[in-house]
Every structure is written in structure tokens, then in C-alpha cells.
Length: 138
Image (cartoon, rainbow, N blue to C red):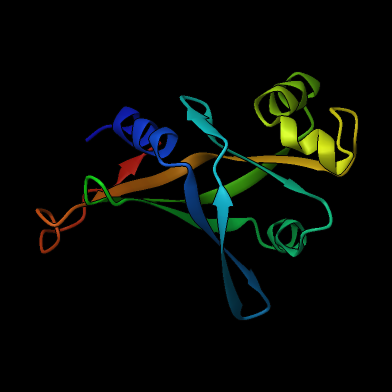
């Protein structure tokens, strides 16, 4: 498996589960995944969400996608980086037009974009369930 296999699985699986911590308490929530490419796994949220504060305090996270149809699970572990890129925010507004209904624009400070650019990925299947993990570094 390669990082390109992981990117494809993430892009084909619209819902992911992202973990954060607050103090010593873990928190996991479902997110509508935005996109992945060779530069990382990209997410969008709002500044009001506790997830944003939690990730700013502790940027370490793990994200999980489960492709029920093919029985595959992708886990990506790394640290998030917050991005203030106008072109990326414009892409977000184009890709996610429902955000405009929430009063967000590409210039809105409440539109938060972050990515995992470096870390480790692993694809689990029933076939490799009992085999040693082969993490993919990216």
C-alpha cells in the first residue's frame, strides 16, 4: 500500500472520525471530510467548535475512515497545522457552498482550515487483521 492508496480511500469516504483531547479526556467526532492530496489530509471547521481549541492546545490527532463497502479502515496519525491561505479558503467555499448559508466567506475568521501534512497512515482489512502493522510514513 502507498500513500496514494490512502489518499484515494480518504477521498472516496466522505465521513471520517477525528480524535482530540481536552486535558486527559479524549473526544472523537464524525466530520464530513474535505479532501486529501500529496500535500496532506485537509479539513474545514468553524472557530466556535471546541475541536478547534482542542487542536490548538494539542495538535496531535488520529483520524479514521471506514469504507464499509470494501471492508477497509484508514487511520492517519499526525499533528495538524492551521492554514491561513486565501486561495484554499476560496476553494473551500466553492467545494462547500452550504458554508455560505452559515454566514461564512473566504474572508471570515470563523472559517478554519487545517491539515495533516506529515504522519503515518495504515489501512486495515480483515486480511491483514492479525499481521504486523505496516505504517506508511508521509
